[in-house]
Structure formats: structure tokens, C-alpha cells
Image (cartoon, rainbow, N blue to C red; front, side):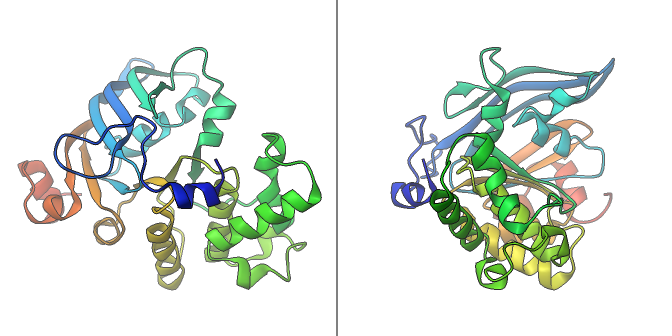
Length: 276
């Protein structure tokens, strides 16, 4: 499904059901009893969470609490770590992503990722965008690639800034522009989910504001999961927030509830700055 189709489709879940709590957004990612081990060390303990379609879910918690480890479970990035072992069930749109029959390359087309530090390829802006569509066979003609490039850069709020520089290197852009280029590269293959691991930590306040505004716009078409150490950022950009501590998902709720009326004293302690 391309971005234009997504825009007209609205918040319709491939799982077909809304959650029982009255939240109108259907479940997109269903995680049950997810555990992660690095060798003998358990990094993540029995995580259960439903992540809703067309919402931004923020993972917060102290350094080393397991939030980035869990994020990497959602597109099987932990597969690249030799000592890592993941158990439990993660379903995206009803598909068990750890089923041996799942093509991991195709999974990562469905679940895009934006990293902490902008990492454009040392290629032109144009080539950065068409890399994914080319390897996944989404488009073959120059005309099709041109459409994808413009659509993706517009989606990332970058088109007007770079439309006359498409043959210049992506590494020559400013830090904030590079991060938006990486977001454009991610959405070029029309993923269902976008994962963001501290996407603003290397950016200045103005660039951060651009990316946060972009995240709010993108949730109309994508399910977004963001890891952030910045609690103010989580409060600004997310509709749901999950708090992790020492490898445990302590609680997950509407963002307003987490920040104003958390159920667990560990969440309260983190929110109020008693530890972090």
C-alpha cells in the first residue's frame, strides 16, 4: 500500500478489531511475554503490550532499562547480535514476526527505523530515497522513482528545502535535514510502522521542533514508536507512553495519565526526577 492509499484508508487495522478499553485506534502490534537474553543475562522480562495504529507510543525510562532493546525486537534488529535470544510473541497486523517463514528483509520494509544519529548513505539525496524502493522492487522506472522521491521528501517536510539539490550528497545537509532525510528514506517503502530510537538526541532545539512536528503529521499514516530520554518530548509527541525500569515494563497508559496520575510508585519516582 502506498502513502496515498494510506491517507485515504484512515485508521483501519489489518487485525480488524479495536481494543476493549474504548480507545478508537485498533491494535497494530501485539506483544506477549517478550523476553530478551544476551547470553546468560536477561535484558527484558516478560513484556506484554498492545501498540495502537496511527498513534505515537513513547518508551521512556532510565538508561539501560530495556526500552531500546524492546524497540529492536519489533523489527528483529536483535537478530544481528550473536548472543541475543528473543522469546515470546510479537504480531504485527496479525503476523507473527518471529515465525521462521517470515522474510526479515520484507519485515524491515514493513517496519522502518530511524536511528539516534542521522545516518544518510554517502550518496545523493535522490539515491538515498530510492535505495529501499529499488532493492524491494517497488519501482523500476525513472518516472516512478521521481514520484517516490518527491512524495517521500514532502512527507518528511524536506521537499522545498532540497528539491533543487537532489543530486547533491545527503551528508552535506544539516543535522536536522539529515534526520528528516532518514525519515523520508524510511517512508519511501510505505512501511506500516516507523520505529524511532532517540531521533532528536543529536539535534539542536530548532531541528528537534521540526522533527517533533513531523512525527505528529506522520501518525496520520503510520504507527510510530519512539524511544526517548526526554520526558517533555514524550509528553509533546505521544498519545501513549510506556515506562520501563530494570528490564520490566512497569506500566503503559495514555500519555496524560502516565505524567499526571501514574499507577506505580516507580513511574512516579522517575517522572518527578527522584531517579533517572
